[in-house]
Image (cartoon, rainbow, N blue to C red; front, side, top):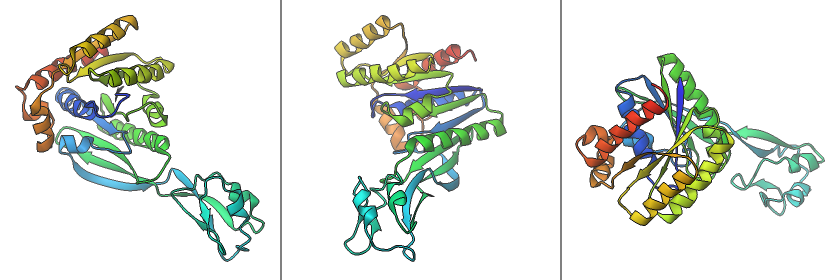
Length: 293
């Protein structure tokens, strides 16, 4: 099974929209499982019009829990907390959103009234369409440990892929270059880096490619909304040439993409004759060549 990760470095460049269309097209010729690892804002299922099949709570974050029957109300835990996560003047109270689960309070407590335990901080949802399975992680508002949740999403998606005999695991990665991105790239066979012709997008493209290089994974660049700014598009081509990266495709700016999002369908399915849909079909064939399918 081949693992393809779609990254962007910068949010809002159309990564998930391209992933949905790519998955839909690949799913017409191969068995494909999709994973949405943008756990802070998962939306791949919306773009595909997928229906929820199963959902389960997950625990990848740790917080301090106080046993008030043992607590001496000495407030030493409050004094040692460097995150201001324990408040109160007479009795300590943990503020869950501030607690990092570091354990300093549990160590200092003379009555051993504090434990550090795992808490529910998100969900893993499984969606499906007629031709695709989508596994998506969803981090609860204000919670942390997104990198661990990405690992769990990928593990769940791999199991689903094995059950269905999938040939491709297509991963919609998170934006940026942080821990969730590192977790998404680890174990990949190929990375597709999506950018747009703006100075900010090129800057963030360079940063995410530096992360990808660390894992020695081959990468190809896709320029979305290609007609946005010619000077910036030319700068992306110069960057690709200087760093020996391939430009896989240019996807034109197309109002039918927006309409397809409103419809809850991939643009290649909803409007197959649209300029963007034609470009994405060419991109799909190029990706198949790159991963030798």
